[in-house]
Image (cartoon, rainbow, N blue to C red; front, top):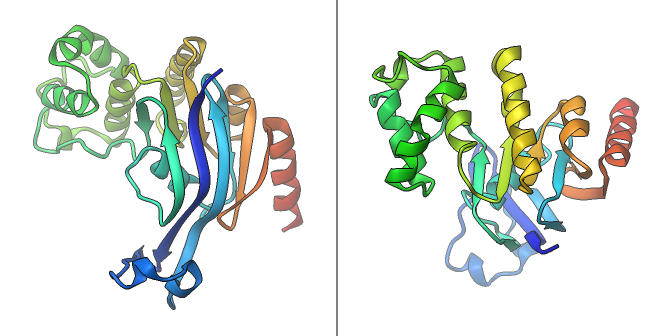
Length: 245
């Protein structure tokens, strides 16, 4: 089994309310000297390896760095320390409706978004009907995206991204939105992708979803990786710490 994701000594720093910026002088200063008043480390000294085909659940309270970690793996955020190596493309179900253009129609957004994720024009055409059918948007294809309901937007985004052939699937809380029937469709689609041998990196506060999809867990607390173990052990530790206050 080969490595899908390798994280070494990962750290990312923010200012309160916005991303911290470093001056040229800061680049040559030690890490301790680079910290300024009002700054904090969202993640610090995080290391782990994910093998191809593994299903990883990321666990922790709000504000502990879970979504930040996914954005770093997706390469939409750069680290201040350490490295993230991703062997293969990613299908990112994070900030799920980002990248869609309000004034473009559903049809135009499907072509644009799928193309930006690397799908060829011929592939988009071949999969277009399946995308619309899964999103339950037949009859809305010429509707401007900005006129869709929030539920429609989420269905469209999930439908497009889940059609990508990338070997690594990043999922951040998207199953918490939408109605029950559509969530079941999402569950089935993720099951299909896992059966194909995809790698899953999954953030959720839903313990049932984590136990369903994941075999291994990463427990983040105050930006540090405090436990890397089977998902049941990680959830037991998290629940114990949470109940202890």
